[in-house]
Image (cartoon, rainbow, N blue to C red; front, side, top):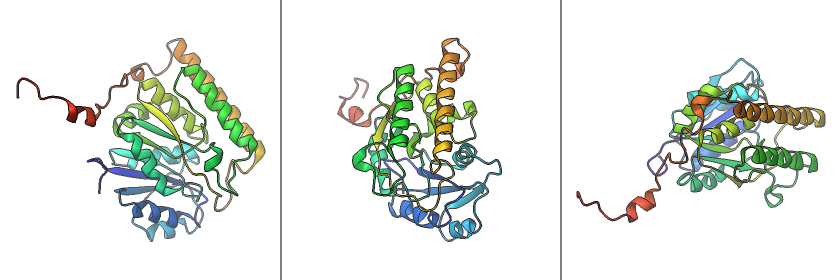
Length: 268
């Protein structure tokens, strides 16, 4: 299939998505641009494997319980040049993959955001606390790293190019629900070209382990702030992932359109 000569993998962590995962997988394949879907069964609900087996996805297993562990395992198993992360709970729109891909030509990493009011569907679990909590933590990260604009640190749907993924993977430390901000910070620290775009956010099928509970959501937000603060302080004192700093310098890919418009060299 490929997208502009690049293969595309979708990775899905699953724990309590038995009733929605088959439709999600099939919708991704129906886009016509997805080469493989990797599902990481993270001690998932009974019947999940049966649902996955009815699709063209490949199922892998991770016994260590946690959102981060599950995504890390799925990404490790993915073979694509471009890797799209998502959740199979019905909240994300598989067709939004084209939005991510539209920016993949010019950016190494494309983060999704669920906090744009026009993209939040009726019934979605994005009340004022979650919306503005994600916004505030994202702005805190943006301020500390002097980065481009961010409005959401908890959105799973994002695209990462293979070179960036291979560079940041050795520096993963989080296996729990606040793995998302660590990925964002490592991408920024590497010098990769990053952008955030709004994606659709719908009502969930089934119950969330974290964001459905206000106390758990507050605890998660506190963990994210602690992680971001610790990471940034460590980098200030030279204790961060030194081998990763500025490895890309924003020059991982030359714009192909620019190349086509360049005059031939004198050696041709």
